[in-house]
Length: 183
Image (cartoon, rainbow, N blue to C red; front, side, top):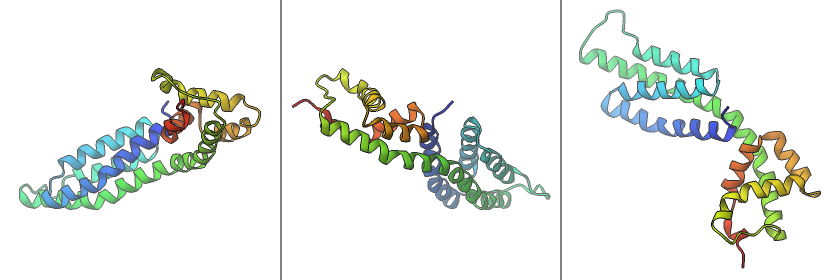
């Protein structure tokens, strides 16, 4: 199962591609890239178990559908590009809707985790001197916070929002190694 942080990163990466996809549709009127993008977005959403995968699949189907007249040539390509532009908003909304719950959960836990990191760094309880110790630092911070009498309430609050893997990912993102270096 993917963690909230990984889900968020994967979907946010797709969402950040949207402006480029729309620009390509406007400039080149080529829908091939947009259809491929929709497939990737649909696969990601489906892989994470989000119902928004159906919205993206429907948008892709609307773009790929042939008009009743089944006209071919430049006019048909322009119509397809127009439909793709119309459906780009649906795809963007689907990705945004899927990201929002994870984003909110991570945002609630981030200040708690940041506070834990700052308290441990200020106390001097953990120091790193060797390069191999850097890889273990997020785990060591979390173990210390979970077992420490004064830090465990903060750790428990963070654990309510995120699982251990997500917490370690947030610790890694928030970590300033300079705070833990030996003098």
